[in-house]
Image 1: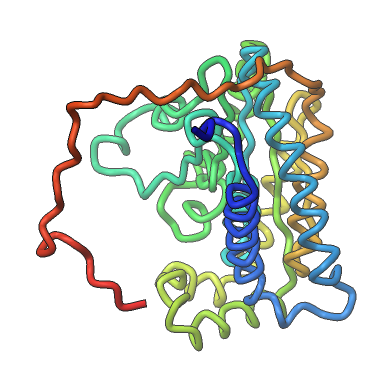
Image 2: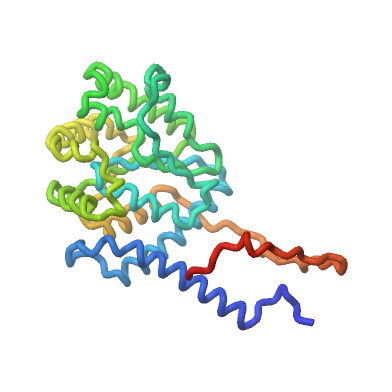
Length: 296
């Protein structure tokens, strides 16, 4: 009788096909970047480096879990700057119970009466966790300020409070990393036009995004003020040049890995136990009416 716990040639072939399928799906994720200029890394280089960096992210995740670290990474930038794309590539191979994403909606009536940072604090990581903020408390210095959702007095109070708030987080042991994704006026216009033309991406273009095009210079002034007043030694800003999506993703992930020293974590070997078989067990048939039709 064959030992079912030992892989045979057909097992290896099945594993090979599964890996090939997963890599094909990743290649499809790159189809939306055909407009990148000739300075972009080739597809072959991009995917080779992305897989290498994602392997390092898994090692980092193991280290964070093993050492009980708490990591917060903030992603800010203009609409369509590529924040979501790099977050997707960071989390793609990580455990969602360890690496979480917080993308908070607009505050409700109750949250508007809270201490400004309160709803963000509720999402901060516990030991052994990584939290990625897809936009963060810096909404107050950006969209809320530009669109008139807060007063200038509230903005000034934010600028007085946020350095101390972030120093408090760092003193508590949280590793805080802040990224600003920078794109040019022309590149944002191109990405918006692509979203308008692509029915699969039109949902990404909100009325707020459309209005941001008209207020480009207002957002620029707000961004410059924010970077100048919240760039502190304990939590500096890092600017990612993001006109080229592939280059921005590789550069950001590579830089993030450098911000948190990590090492190998030893794992005990995984051994599959022998399956228990019961002579009196007969598998019940499934009604044909319950089967999903095989259309493909």
